[in-house]
Length: 275
Image 1 (cartoon, rainbow, N blue to C red):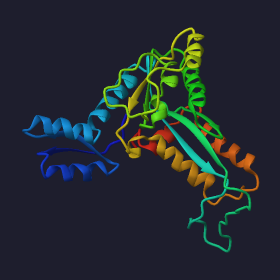
Image 2: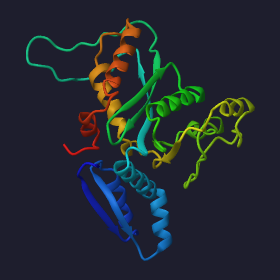
Image 3: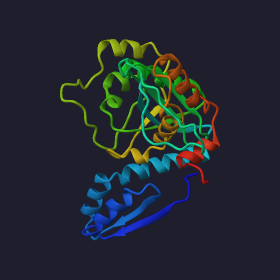
Image 4: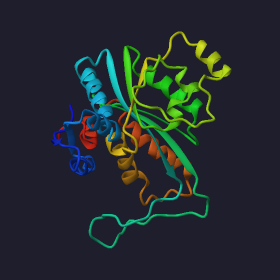
């Protein structure tokens, strides 16, 4: 279940909207209700601040909690890391030894990870590659479906990166019904390409993934972001492997996949279980 936190309600959305923005900026505070005599003002605030989206996610989370054999809820995201270590102050035991990063003369190559965190079990599905594109996401979605072969519905909570809503990606999924506006580049097609259609037609069935949209620019609302923070703190920060890029990539992968079979420790760390 969700970790304990402070639940607040805002009555009156005139001056109260400033209180609402302050509450939404605090990770351990959940806005449970908003109220105003002007119904249109309530609808506008719920849409603008993503409250309606969070309520929709919470309802699907309850469904996954009560029927885990039928429904799965995953928090999905992508993240980048680089060959060169991050450098800043850090903690170390008292003594003469101090942690030192090792930077190389090589270019600061980037690598991309794609992950999904099961909100109930703490199981993590993870892949990484030099870039993230539609084909890579299709492969990742296939891995998700393989991890949960008996699920009727896999609810996938995502940010609003336009690629998540590209027709060439959505054609592989069951029909989506987006309750909130989708923003895509104007030059993108409305229909999938012939190649994407042919690939999708080769499937026995569409992937049982339903997309749930996070509020815009709300990384605080996606618990898997804390897993990315954990791997940066544990593996990437002040590392000494800038001349051994393959080893660094392997260590990042090994750390994240240590949660492959689920972890209550991870759920507590990201705030999905009480401490």
